[in-house]
Image 1 (tube, rainbow, N blue to C red):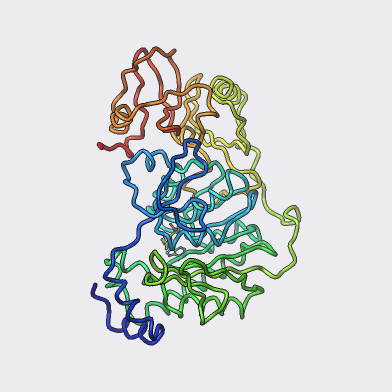
Image 2 (cartoon, rainbow, N blue to C red):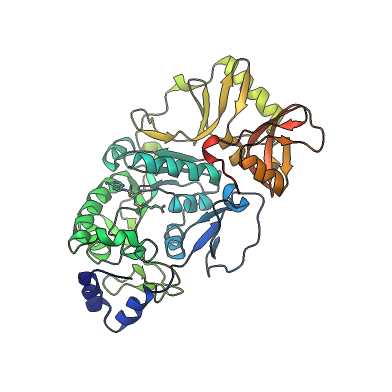
Length: 440
Ligand SMILES: C[S@@+](CC[C@H](N)C(=O)[O-])C[C@H]1O[C@@H](n2cnc3c(N)ncnc32)[C@H](O)[C@@H]1O
């Protein structure tokens, strides 16, 4: 792999005797990994677990596989998995993922939250925020808002709000050179400094949103000290924060530039490049009720007729009560996590869980709802075999082998939901979203 000379010289100085192994690692193939999704009911066993992780495995999963399509797995290289592992939110926490697309850290955080608390997953780039929302939908979490905002505007809506903030933001991306060599030409000697300055601006916004006593995880996929340790040191010098030391295990390296933070190098850790620092806010924690936030306005609740239609749907189809705030936008019904402030004015890509649409005298469930529910949480579902799955994801309707009464059913494959679809006569109509369809 051809690397910029200035890059080579820089790491020769920094890594000293390790430098040759470091350089040689660029001629090795990148390490692929994935995480299994604990929110899904139909679990599978996978080989080659990543040591000391709850859900991590080495290996590649096809984007056309049942595991991927049902959201049972999320592809993420092993070093990046250590960020969520270090963040490790507790159930019930209010969490912010500040630069979240395509969703590696977000889905990992959601695994820990297990549909409790709330996650605001933000991505500044509109196109990428849609990819993020699609990945969140497949993952099937019920407690996420996806926003498409600048961190500055976000900070105005969520002052001192979050118990945990993860900032895995724009960086010089050196640790991704092996996986994505297209990133190499963007690199120049001053690039890390430019990114460090942007990171400091974003981190200042992040801290305005951190609740007193909360935690902040700052990570990059680069090795440049100008970002990483120098930004972390700047935080310690300018903000009321203390480092929470991270245990370096299984090939992680304790940073000698700032002990307590960790680095991952591909010649020592089986994965790509990463830096992680964790901080604790030193201010006295304040009870959430004392923080003044504008609550979600009442006018968004359901009309009597909508409520009746939704209740009738729940009675017929759901074996679970969905906790949260119900909100309508036009004919669409959403479930938002409890405890959110008024989000009006923010660009929102995913307004919580889209439950479905009110049509004339009926309620139609959304694809997202059918991804978020476990088969044990619905009253009626149809389990497909592999051949039916291949036809279904290609957009075909499925001739049924047994007779079912007409109506909505969750579509299930290998124990996990793939949206809802309607039985009409002896056919299962295709409701798989057009944008997701593919031929195996
Ligand atoms: C390394 S990627 C994030 C990867 C993501 N955390 C994951 O695990 O899937 C960095 C993200 O920062 C976003 N970004 C770029 N400039 C930004 C800015 N000024 N403020 C906030 N986010 C920014 C990029 O669009 C990109 O999606």
